[in-house]
Length: 221
Image (tube, rainbow, N blue to C red):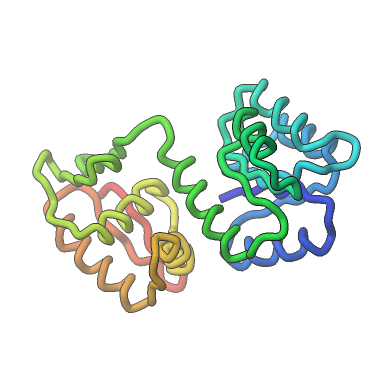
């Protein structure tokens, strides 16, 4: 996941970069609105964390130009303005979420996970890999047209794997995204989920391969 951080406060920027990279995100950073706008015009990101008070070009103008280019990337606004009308204005301009400074870094990390999940599933509620389908709104998985008996947590794991089908998903990435849903996830728990999912998928044309030392990958057989 690629995250663009646009923040000119060096202390806050350092904290943001630390927690995002610790969570295994690919993070880029700009401290200038004009340079950030130029970068966003030519590169794609999965999430933009955007400060409103920036030199050369403020965050509102960066956001306006981003949406004018029809870019649908989720945007999380950071601002010291705490008035309701300021928050409404930011959301009306096309932001997806809003945090007022000062904020807890753990809360920001949770907001990031939520926006990334929302961005991955935007535009379609149905995921498909081979004959495996997952309705993310109806919370129903089917294989060859037959419903699978999966728990809510197993459906969450399956969704993460299907969104990255053909690519490796590490245990750290799984734990990071799942823990954002309300509980801490251990390596042992992830292994149990994988075992149960494999049993449900064994009669179909998709499988979950363990990449030793790396993680898991959902692929068509």
